[in-house]
Structures are given as structure tokens and as C-alpha cells.
Image (cartoon, rainbow, N blue to C red):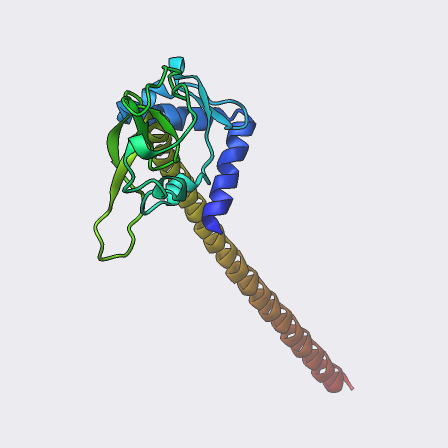
Amino acid sequence: MRDLAANNDLLKMIENNDTSFEKMFVAKSSEQPMLRKVDVFDGNQSFINLGELGNYPFDMDDPIFELSSCCRRAAKYRGTRMKDINIKIKSCPICQKSLQFPKNVALCEFCGNFGCADCIYKKFPFPHKESKSAERESGDICMVCEWKMFLHQATSEIVSNIQKREDQLSTLESEIEVGQDKRTVELEQLTTIEDRLTEVKQAEEEKKERQENKVEN
């Protein structure tokens, strides 16, 4: 729930064109040169601009960020030779280069899309493990999914930092509230003591006045 709240806060920052998000992203980009190519966010964080490769949707809830092995779409082709796969794709969806099936065709195991071997040529570790004891698997990844992975990592760190600051603020507010409650209790106790002293003083004055009246009589 906290992660969801932090993500919502991040989205509000972006939608409201909050410059603090831009500053954080630029700072993170300077730390990771690969992110410098991801140079455009739209107002609703709906796409990333990869220059000549075009614009691609970006969603923090994209299923590729939860993979521990190849996606279902790619899994059905595992163990099958590329020449035995019957698909009707004439050009690479990333660079638009003409595909000569199966000579220069590759499969991204993150999004399950086919493309040319120039756009799908790297191995990348899946974000999660099958189990705690298992080693993390790696799969073939297209350039678009690779950029998404780097951007997700940077954005997740920003969200984590926002959450930490919110937690610190919440702790501080709680401490202030406790201090205020303690102060209120102390003031109430002081008021009670003052009222009691006033009552005692009045009683003593009344007693003294009665004694003086008795002596005069």
C-alpha cells in the first residue's frame, strides 16, 4: 500500500509538471549514462522517447517488471527453431528494418515480440528469481524493454526516496503530536493545581475572616 501511495504521489508530480521530479530524474540520469537517451516524458508519463526509435508506452505496472523467467508469449516458442515458427511479420517493430525470416529475426523474452537481430541482441537478467535459493535467470531482451528496465530502476529509486522522506515526515509529525499531547496534559495538570491553590487560599482567607469576626464579638 505504501508503494502504491508513493507511486501515486510520483504520478501527481509528473502530471502537475513538478520540477522536483525533473531534477531528481536528471540527477539519476547523470549517474547512469544509459538513461540520458531517455530524454522525454509526456505530462501523464504515458510514453518514453527513444529518439530515432520513436515513442513507446511506459507503465510502472508493466508485467515485464515482475518476470522471473520468459513471458508466456515467448515461453511457447522455447525449444522451437526460428525457421519452424510461423509468424507474419515483415518488418522489425522497433527499427522498421525489413525481416528476412528466419535469418535476422530474434525474439524478446520480456515482451514476447519478434524483431530484428540488431534490436534484440542482448541478454538481461529477469527482475525476480523463481525462488530464494534459485539463481536469477537471464533472457534475450529488445532495446525497448532494456530502456524500460533502466528507467524502472531509476524511477523505483526515486519513489523509494520519496517514500523514505514521507516516512520521516510522518515520524516527525507523530513526535510533534505526542509532544503536543504531553504539553496539553501538563497544562491541564497545571490548571488543576492553580485551581486547587486558589480554593485553598480562599478557604484560608474565609477562616481568617471568621476568626477575626469572632475576636471582635
